[in-house]
Image 1 (spheres, rainbow, N blue to C red):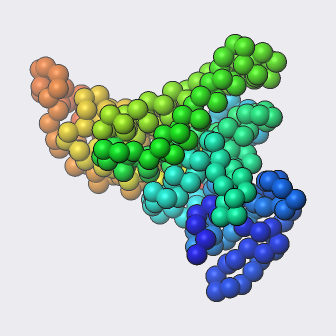
Image 2 (cartoon, rainbow, N blue to C red; image 1 turned 180 degrees about the vertical axis):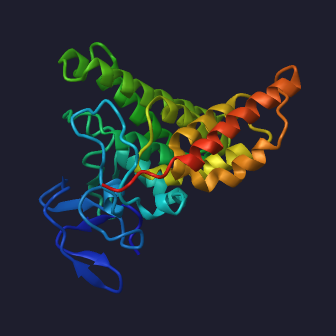
Length: 315
């Protein structure tokens, strides 16, 4: 079987029991005289043109050319997002490499996302909001192993480092390509900086031993500041684990439940965990009874927001 994200021939993509399907002439990465496209095998949705979630049947809802806001997720979610499933380690590692330094196929040819995090910065085609969310999904998936193993996967650390350093060198430095040539707006400089800071802090937290359901707080902060994308379903199990953990660091549960309240009806799967969390005591500040009541009040507001806000309608 082909690994997730394997190169798929444009003219003949393997699908199901040996059937083939023609792919449109789009989403092509030119690596040599042969034309290839990054796709996903049909086990996670019909293989088609495009990359990332597009290959799993998810449309890119973010406006191109550096949109300044994130639309709430609408339309069809990918299978893993819709069912709350998370990437396996091998797939997540592969996705980080594709968004960062790139990797190579079985035949040794270069392989990368044609519209991925680093590639879209040169030549600059505007910030692609989906890239941040896909990188965070993959990073949180590899974090399950990264936070507890004494020896870390060098390729994962390399991929995250390239994503952050390339974004900083190209888009944040005053003498970098994008700012020097006035190709990026001030608003997008701020958004790119937020992406890099969130990815970097998350990776460092894993290296410091924090588990993914603690680190997902960094993503919750982004949800509060900006919003979420189509793959929000893949983050919900981590949010549920976060609010269910009585050992969660002080202050983390507040931003997590606030983010869940903002997500609204799409976070219905976390309601049972929130109701259980509402019954616990919170004593990291004194007086303890006041701290408990303040946290419980925020949890109640999140529950009400989820129950009273229907999921976004498809367009």
